[in-house]
Image (cartoon, rainbow, N blue to C red):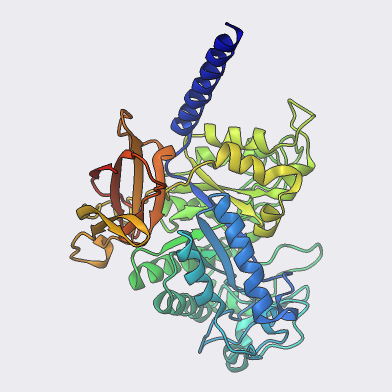
Length: 500
């Protein structure tokens, strides 16, 4: 009798676990931007060589894939240089140790990363710093553009910058971006928070010459903001004119304006995009000049000057119909205790808040290595609670909302490696309509076919086939295959009942 009771209790417990897992899957978002920044600055790649760098990056990408990260933002232009083969700008010192020095052996980190990310089902966004031309650690500039036009640059606190007030500079940077987008199969072009330089007490931006030439009598601060606005507008239009499906995103500093300067600002007290960097981020979003926005909300919940919760709510209220993603500082998150439970750090509190905000569509990890290192089980929490399943990208209907056609001729074929589900790609009239990936769902006998539940996704693949897991015996499943285009619009479903 005791054995029977124990058996019944075990069955009940097992059923509870199944129900819990089912509920967990149903409450997870099917679409979510899950990014990670991989920076070239401070990565010491110039001292390890190609093979070690590739080994490190492969390991990071594998670990990030296990965490269901689906976007990599890879820094390829830190200071008017290139971590890719360019006829416009010199090789980066962050790759070779000296600006202009060719890597030995010659290889192309951007192309390599595009291939590695796509192989893992990740998007690759090329991350550039637009206006920075030389940092304090770079002894000399070898850029031909600088050599030809030194008057188009200014020096500020040891930095050299492309003067944003000079139209030719803005055009040149758009040319650099167009070159990347044209020659590489990138999924996005990304810029960070450096526009006009971060202010240093007692220093003035030395742009008198460009202001006298192009200011037109405007207030100088308004003129600087206009320069950055024009650049953002032109960069967005340039990218989409080359490849309409390539997304353009920006990761601004976390505070737009403080409320004491603007009634619409946040209840914060810190440096401001609008006033200090001349970056009118809300104008870019309102005008539709960015596809996604990742404000760097790196502070902790409870910070007196810049509270994470305050800023998350503020940016959510100002998303203005564009994809909004929260920039997360991994190391800072685990440094501070949960304000409601001092026994744990803030990852739960931050992600629960993020998921509760209707216009927040994901997060981006600063930085990839910190996420891979899993400090205080930060990444374990992501894998077990917040990223237990894969996720598709958020849709961007302002670029394209037409889904590809559905797949054709789904059938199971026995091969030397066992049963394989094959299908044929749908026909496409344009590149935008073409199927780039496929989603494979699996449902056990008696389960409702529910494509909103990411727990049923078994693969997101570039291949037009899926190897069925089979170890003998009877197998009864319904498989569903859909097609995804460049912007991950999803086709109608094709079902295939499998009985083996």
